[in-house]
Image (cartoon, rainbow, N blue to C red):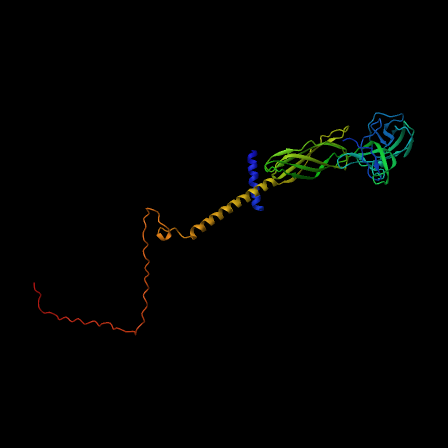
Length: 414
């Protein structure tokens, strides 16, 4: 079958030649006003801590009496609901710290990571629903402070999931590589999500599908393809999911991509761009790319058994190496044919233009024993000369004599 495909590929190439001739991302140092690069790393004993020089601090859910075992804040509340809760802010440093505390909205980065708006950007959603007891707090060294906050859900809050975070940050002054003084914000946060009941829609969409073929120097070898696409949460609840990419060639061959990371948490209205590699792709001039995404409920939610989402695209896969080989072979064949024609033409011209060998003595000495025949002299007979025309003589035709026969009266003899 593979040999048949290769033969078919060769035939198509000849025809063309003839025709054409992961996890939450939070605190990290940030140069104001650039948006924060969110990550979960830090030097504090807590997973929710960050470090800025010798300053190390963190934040996590708590009760009025102290830290609890919640990973984040999660509520289900109708419009108009009011909820009071607490965060624990810890200073792990050996000196007191004055920290900025605020709430803001969350969003997905281009690769699907979770992060929050910069402190210089005003929130428009859940970040406006949270009121903190204070926006700046000074915490002694090696101490923890419990801070209350109030969640007030607007009466006109839209159904679905609203996600954000409560952030604690420390701004320090430093110098960049050019010696300029810049303000660097180191921050860490804890998530907060509110589910507003109503008409919930769990839906993903795939768009902007593109694929680029990468050929090989082997005229009969397979190449690879880079596939790009965008997954968008077009519903109003948080979703996770798994992904798969399959590429089918014009000749029927099919290849799947390498492992693709699962969608960890795609927020309502947000998108993520996915890039993956497919190997073993036949250069079949065209190929079909099929992307399949299987949505799933965010951990803790009820899985409504979502249906798969599919999207297709087309890729151009030209076997340039094979085409070049065919062109080279065609060129060699043409040169060989042209040389053959020239040699035949030269041979024909040499055989008919020169004198033919003669068997007479004038052509050279006769071979011993060869019979020689003297050439007959060539006789030239001159054409008769025309005589001068004389006077025109008219010869009258002889007259016919009248035949007279006398009648005989004598009887015939017996």
